[in-house]
Length: 375
Ligand code: GMT
Image 1: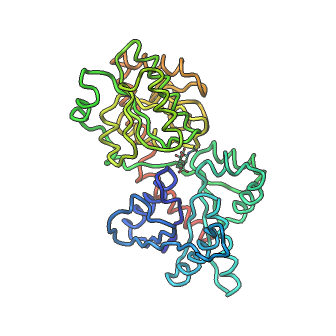
Image 2: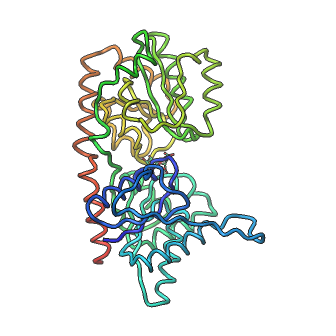
Image 3: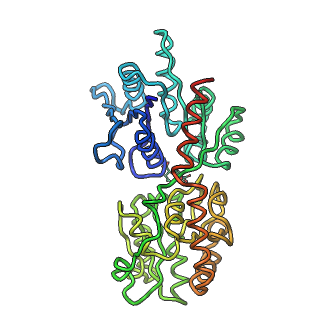
């Protein structure tokens, strides 16, 4: 197949899923054309069967604001026609599905056609899409998509109820390369961050308010009073300054280690004991899956799709949003009970391997592509 993929190319789960999917499809011999304003950050090398088409922004004095959605449509049209695409797969409804819809209508005028699939990842449905001004557009673009997938059952249900939609939505979970994300010896790195044998908690995100990163520092505050512990914070974003302020206020500036954006995630995860995900909203939780694949138990909030990934009292623990006391209690329980910790760690790895391996999930996308193309 020849597939066009549009995603947000920056750090973030949806871009990672789209890019890893494109890479996996290319490895299976499909031709994949990424259409976006920047090259997705995991496509930083030559890969056979992968092509990148940059969306150039119109620059004209009359346009005070960027016309990204329009420029994207034009680029889609160009690639669909010149590369003879079979299918477009867009990640995020706004603006990608709207651009794909427009491209489809324009193709129809010239007796052509292109089918497009929209994958819903989360905030387009749970946050941004609920803004009254966006709502009709999100609903319309979902209803007009030739196929729609969501990354969890939770997100599917939310989409159907929030937008009053009756369309079939296919749930296809996030996936992971279990050979890249695997348990490894992390002792070398661990020596630097926890030189006196401290325990290590880790959190990775884009530090948006929805991630509640400050909760991880409050959890550390409670845990560290009983067991010397360090907290690794990986990533960057709007809440980072507040996190730095809070760690100073709680006198934890030595215990909280800000690593910024990092690519060597498997190595970092393997230097830690427990992954924290206290999010306010999370449609799946790809970074928790990455940690589980490395054998880390996860302590998380009970929101969104997280209970579909993390099994309470088996691969980790789940608590109410903001209940840092309970989350700290769960962390302490795991850190003080070696046998339980080992069982949870093995369970986490097994769950990632048995349910979310790339080799299990990518074929589901291919089957879905075929179903949509033949419908
Ligand atoms: O979590 C983020 O802020 C990034 C966001 C994105 O749009 O890239 O991630 C969303 O998509 C991921 C991949 O499907 C999911 O694993 C994340 O749970 C989801 N984030 C939220 O729902 C907040």
